[in-house]
Structures are given as C-alpha cells and as structure tokens.
Amino acid sequence: MLKKIAGAVAAGAVVLGTAGVGTAHADPYWQCVTFARTFSGIQIFGDAWTWWTQATSAHYATGITPQAGAVLVFQPYGKMTRGHVAVVSQVLTDRIVQVTHANWGGSRGKVEENVTMVDVSEKGDWSKVKVWYDPTGDLGSTVYPTYGFIYQSAKDAAAQVMAQVSGPAGKDAAKPVAAKDAAVKAAPGKPAAAAKDDAVKAALAKSGT
Image 1 (cartoon, rainbow, N blue to C red):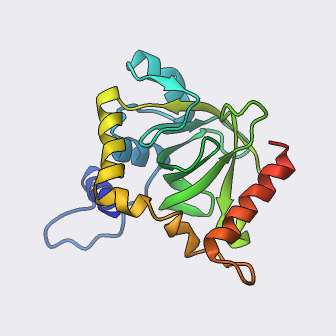
Image 2 (image 1 turned 45 degrees about the vertical axis):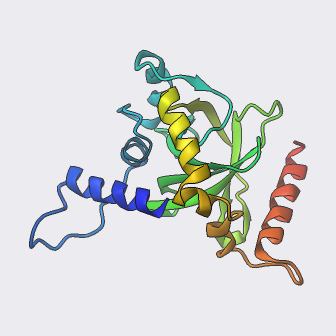
C-alpha cells in the first residue's frame, strides 16, 4: 500500500509539474479527484459529484457493495459543494471499510491512508456514511450522503483482490486496522484495536444500524 501511494505521489509530482532534476519542490497539493484517479486507475475527470453520472458513459460498473479499489462517490453536502471521492483500500466487513483519500477535512491537499468509514444507512446500502476522526478517537458526528461505488474493470478488480490476499500489500492488510490502531488510544486494559472496535460498535448502535 505504501509503495502504491508513493507511486501515486510521484505521478502527481509529474502531473503537477513539481518534479525536476536539480529543482527543489514541495509535496504536491492533492485534490481528491486527482488522487482517486491516479490511485484507482479509474479515468474519470471533473468535480467529484459528477463521477457518478459519468461512470456509466465511461463504461464503469457501479453499485452499493464495497470492493477494494472501488471509488466511493460522495454527494455535495454542506461546505462540500463539489462532493468527494475516496478509494476503498480494505473491506473489513459489509458495513465497515478503510479508504485512502486526499484533501479531506483538516488535511487539505494531503493524503490520508486507511481511514475507517462506516455505513450507517438504514438499508445497509452505503447511501450514508460516517468517517473516522482521529482527534476524537471516534467516528465523526456528520453523516455524509453518497451515491455508491464505481468499480474498476472486472479484470483489474480481481487482480487488486488477489494482490491484497497474496502479495506484500496483502500481508499488511491482514494486520487488523494496523495503520489506524497506532493513532488510537486504547481503553484501560484493552489493546488499541479492541478500543477502536468498541467505538465503531457504539457509533453503529447510536445510529440504529
């Protein structure tokens, strides 16, 4: 996963014109759409919320089931007037995934890896989600409306799943929410993963799902 992000960053540096021999440059400022396109390989352009309607004409399958490598499209909501897109990096359960995305919340222009996201919709169709918020060690309070997932081609999706299961990335993926656990303070007498699991379960209970 880290290698893939490094590759995306390097590609972004070239696209944004910040890479060059003998030239000092800062890390690229990532828009969510630019990162999602580079990271997922799904070649859709324009504002994030338009990806959903563009997907069909671009011959990409869409649906409501999370899948590694798929892009979740957020509807415009509040100050997020152009929507948002995030790439699914791991599917933990049918209601919980981890995403890697850019330019979210307080991390303007930055990439956040393996961020936990929970489906809190009444029908379990991923039309409403909550996103993990590290400063509070809990899911954020905002419920974001989404359109659904845009999938890579069947061949690419299968390769993505196999890579996670059998490749180096798969070994990292097998570690339960390792990247996020490091940032979560464990409850007394509990490991970080258990503390986070409790927080997610509590949030789901509050939402009535």
